[in-house]
Structures are given as structure tokens and as C-alpha cells.
Amino acid sequence: MLRSIQFLGSYSGFLFHRLKLHGNHYRLSFITTSTTTRCFRQFRASSIRSESNPDVTSSSSSSAPATSRSIGSARKINFCQSCGGPTKHEIPDGDEKERAICTLCGKIAYENPKMVVGCLIEHDNKILLCKRKIQPSYGLWTLPAGYMEIGESATEGAIRETWEEAGAKVKVISPFAQLDIPLIGQTYLIFLAKLMTPHFSPGPESSECKLFALDDIPYESLSFSSMLITLKLYIEDIKVGKPKFHYGLINKWPGTSPSEIHAYTFDYHLRT
Amino acid sequence: MLRSIQFLGSYSGFLFHRLKLHGNHYRLSFITTSTTTRCFRQFRASSIRSESNPDVTSSSSSSAPATSRSIGSARKINFCQSCGGPTKHEIPDGDEKERAICTLCGKIAYENPKMVVGCLIEHDNKILLCKRKIQPSYGLWTLPAGYMEIGESATEGAIRETWEEAGAKVKVISPFAQLDIPLIGQTYLIFLAKLMTPHFSPGPESSECKLFALDDIPYESLSFSSMLITLKLYIEDIKVGKPKFHYGLINKWPGTSPSEIHAYTFDYHLRT
Image (cartoon, rainbow over all chains, first blue to last red; front, side, top):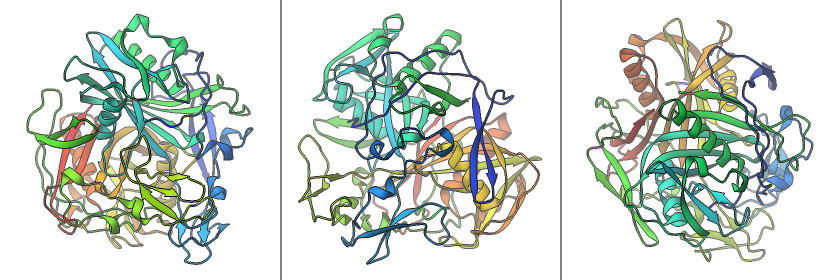
């Protein structure tokens, strides 16, 4: 199940960034050209909903620029999961980032981004979408996707989520897109897949599942910008040949707040 | 920094699996052919060290087959990070997996796989490796890699880790490999990269950094099987053309224990 996603915003190709490293610190700089990457036509997101991740976004700075978009969720960890001791929030020896450290047993609570895995299912030149019956984005269309679980691979997670949300048995064909959303600590991994049988039906989290011709995709009623970007990339690829693998960074524009849901850039787009 | 990785084992192409879904349960089945995936020559891992992840492996079943390789780490969560309340371990309503649920505030402690990000740095037909000065795998060679942090993208994490471990400023060229290791809840994302300047020097976690010609890669002294597989995939690609993007699942053979570090398969290999 997909319990969360975060705001996304407008899309811009031709914008790449890289880290410049200065001692123990790093900052982002933006460049406008790259001989080794390729980007694609600019498009704008529309009707993309703002969503909140209860684990993450409440600690996000509403005005944090891209240069300091660490979400600092360690401050939300008040107790040790192992022994129940209260935590202190310090930079451990040899580390560079503040962590929640147990004052009783000394255990450090590391936090890491979560992976959202899903399937872009091709069938008879159509794409399978699910209408969400849960919040966030109730009533809007999405690719079947959700959090990857401990003990499964990304493909297994994508297949499981597709079964849970669309009642569809699928075969994964190839990895299609990895889309990082650093502000909320999420990474999307979307696989191209095919129906193993031509059957599907909405699971408990979906009110409807439907195959859409590429010209009929409901862009104005998609649930998440990550899904919009995935579908746009797919259609761009189909127009010129066969799908490639895409890596990209969904990043809000510097100075914009998370509530400005259309103000995002799609940066560092790499294709393989 | 790379605080953990887990045992890996032998490598086998031509082995794929897929999920078969039965109501609320799923199981793995293995198939031997695929018209839509390509695999490559079999090779064997050797001299790959056993490593432990303090967060994960202690709860792994030593004899769990691939069909039930969930590591069940929820049982290690005894207290709520938010309120400090004791947890109970139950399957929440609408869920299918046991979780640690706070008995005071009701918060569910979800656990998800961690992403390890790193760089395969090409320079003058050589590859940059680091000799580890920390455990696990002290004294063995690795690509610079480590856990992706909240607030950064995979590429930013890979660049940061390369700076921290090899003192090298790099430019990411393309995504190269995603390697899932479900048993320990890790996913590797390795990017091809180039040195921005021809300088590098070992960071605090490395005793040495060195460029290796492809024929001189120290396969018998590599630190992790994920690194061995990454390098083998790269060299396979270089031999026949240019690097592709690889997805694969590092999986132990059914019936083998985590201590059997050479008994792994590299399954579900997809190239894009």
C-alpha cells in the first residue's frame, strides 16, 4: 500500500546539479548543460495533489532551499526502540549528521530513505491505472505502487503491490524509472510489467482499475507527480522507440515551500 | 560510510523467480528461462567475506529458505520511538505482516529496506577501489559506497560516499546496477562516475585508494559480493560494448544458511 507521498511540482528538463565538496560539507550547484546526460521536453505538472508523510514531512522546513533540504527527522525520535531509554540528539563521533542516540544503551537510530516500488503495466497498448480508495489522493489515479518491505526484492514488492491494489498477476519485464524525492526521503522504483492473465480487479485500496490508451491517460486526475513523470517518460520513450531506464531527482525549486505543489524540477535526468 | 553488508554466495545466471499470488499470501517459484530477460555467464564468488548488519542479521533465520526469507526484525522493536511506550507485535488491521505497534499511542513502527549507494569510477581504463580501514571486511577492497541518507538523492549519496571514502570529486555518468539483497533488507544502487580531477586520497575509513586496470582487479580480496557482482557485470559489458543498466537479486540458495557465504544466486537479472 502506498501510505504517503509528498508534494511535487513543475517539471524542468535541462537542469542538472552536482555536489561540490568542501571539507566535511557539501552544497548543491546547478548547471544547465551536460554532455553525458540527456533530458527531454519540458512539461508542467497539473492537478497533482499535496500529500503528507506522517513519518517525515511534518519535520520538513517549509522554506528550506534545495541546498539544505535535510528533513532532520532524527529530532522526532525521542526513545530507543531497543531499551526504551530517552534519546539525545547529537552528531556521533566520526559522523557528520545529527542522530538520535540512546542515553541508556548508546544505540544510534539511523534513518534512511524508503523505497516505493510499483509497476507500469502494458497491455494491448494500454496502461493499467488504479483509482485510489484511500487517502492521500482519494479518488485519483495511480500506478500500483507502495513501500518495499523488509525481506523482499524491489520486483517482488512491485508484484505484491500490483496484486494488492489491482488484483493483477504480472510479470516484470525491466526496470523503468528510479525517481528520488529527497525532501521526503523516498525513492520510486517503477518496473515495466505485463499481465500474466488478462484479469484485474480493484483491491481494498482501489475503487476502480482500468486500462487506459496512451492518449486517454487522465493527467488531470493523477494522484502523484512521480506517477505523472513516470507516465510522461514512458510516452516519450514509446514515441521514439522502446522504453529506456531513467534516473531522476524530483526536487522543489529553491525558495519554494512544500505547499507550492507545482513548483518542482525534475533534475539530474539520466537515461541508460 | 558502509556500516554493514551481509553474506553473499555463489553466482548463477539463468535463474529467475517470480511471485505467485494466492489470496493474501505469496510465494516464490523458480523458473529457468525468460524471453524478456537476458542473463550472462555464470561465475563463482570466491574469498567473499561474511559480514553482519547489526540492525538486521541477528534476527535472520539461519536456515530460512528463499520462500520465507522475511527477516522479521519487527520483533526487535520493543519500544515506541515517539512516546516510549512498550510495543506489541501483531498484524495491524488491513495489513498482512506483523508489526511492532505501540500499546500506548498506537503508532506502528514500519521497517523498510535500506539503500546503499556508491560509484564505479572509470579513469584511464582503470577502476578506483578503496581498501577498507574499518570493519566489516577490514583490509579488503571495495567500491566507495554507503547508506543513502534522508534528505539526499541516490546520486548525491554516491558522490558524498566517494568523497568521504576516496577523497575524490566525481561526476555521475549513469546508473549502472541495482542489486537487491532481501535477506538483509538492503538494495545497492551503483552509478558509473568519472573523476572531476585526477586526485584522490583515502578518507578516514580507507587505508588506501588505488586505480586498478580491469585485468588487475583483486577479485580474491574484494570486500562484498555485491561489489564482485558489480565489477563482473561491468567487465562483461565493457567486453561487448558499453555499460548497460542492470537489475538483479542477490539471493541465497534455498536451504543454505547465512554462514554459507559462497552459496548465493544472482537471480532475476534484467538489463536495460
